[in-house]
Length: 534
Image (cartoon, rainbow, N blue to C red; front, side, top):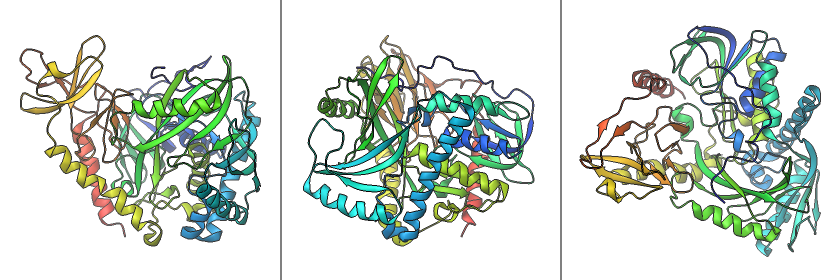
């Protein structure tokens, strides 16, 4: 089993959306990010009569949505009894209500567009394997029922091994995310609305109208902006309220089908479901989460998942990973960006990206259209709840100064390029500089700066995915320094090195990469805005 693309990445039909050309553009709403949040927002706004444009830095579903396991559920990562403690019983009811409504909206869109995307209503089971977990399960069941979830105790969920009990929630759902969202993108891309691929947005300037800078040069004017990029573009204040985790997934053929969504209560927990494909029935298992960039030997995570899969008599033949963003107080941040009136953001979906991403689209659409939304206050992106989040806030944000200093003081892993083996990445001190060096299977050396372009921490090599990951705020880069995941928006600087001299010299950045001056100016403006935010 080797690193592969997600199960959904083998489409029978894959349209290509052009980049924004050299012409400037003016629309009513500009949306950054073509995942579930951005595309659903665009569809709803276009249906409401707005001219919209969606900008994706890579290709649609090229980010986190493309790697989701697509559980559509009211069983959210933060337990209902915890939500009650932090947000009250009314808050817990709103979480249950909004989650149910998001699944209804997805089902409605599937039916309206007549999509063949495997949408299916199935029950969900949260199950316990120890007495301690079973005790917590009873508390959670009572809180879920108080929140209005149609939940009940069930002793025997559809599992091939014994458990101590489970909580069953009916009328949940699952879907093939690519088969769902690609037709939505095609529906958007017509009649004065657009979807652009390979068009990174590097700066947002608020005004009347707002204007956006793109990496290739053209500017975009829009009355409202939605940032739907999983990790908001360098929003410094918001970055302190979220943490980036890497989650791992395997899949493989299975004979019998548990027609259900399943979650255990381990820490980190595992999530399980099946998916019909043209190659047969596949079992999908995910889990083994850890903070991005803080474990380099990530092969071990896949190995543990493969061992877990033996309980289901499944031998995995595919694997992938994705980021999840954990909010400091347990619920997503959705709505007005801090210090802004015309820019909306959405992040912190935990492991419930499809559900919360759809909720975010509904909340932000109503905000753009000036309509009230019953969940907007609960998910308010500018909220600060000290009593609900102070412990998590301190724990998550201590990583930045610690890793920033540690990255500078930690000795390089190698003193020469010769010490880097085939298919290996190391931090190398060469020519007086610390470089992140990867030698590929053919022996070619890829050398980039080891300093993350977000806030200056030093990256670490991810052995399973051959990427450079930042332990401070979760940015990820390819072996050649291209951005895989934010909040960084600039690539790692490339360097040319020679095996004999070992002397690095800056390489010429690809022409498609954007101006450092633009990003620096945008960051300064952002800091100034957030410094005045209460």
